[in-house]
Length: 126
Image (tube, rainbow, N blue to C red; front, side):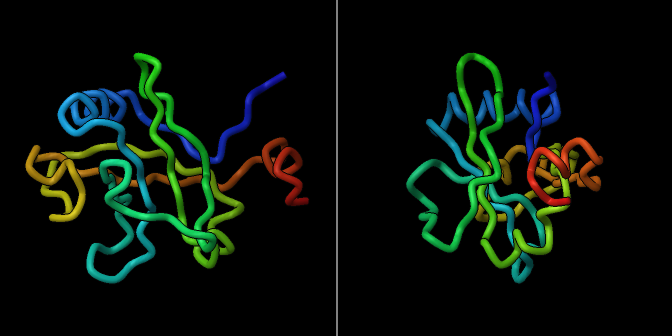
């Protein structure tokens, strides 16, 4: 039986997250909904960004070495994205000043695709 996830991580992003975890400790993402940093996934040390009852846990990224990184999104934004699978990736460029990767010359990026029929059924969206 296949495993279904709302969010995954590319190998390149997982490697950067392992290095950043070694430097900063446990990390988490909050998918930005716009404003100052566009729609970039923002990566913070756990505890530096507080989630609340209005946030949805999309899932935990397996970055290897028994480490996971939770990914959150606001509930209102999730209503727009609930039919979408997200992949956290990394590209060259300057990240947000608020996100931990900003000094590395890399920035996290969210890639998306529509959920397929099996995923829609699994997440009870049909």
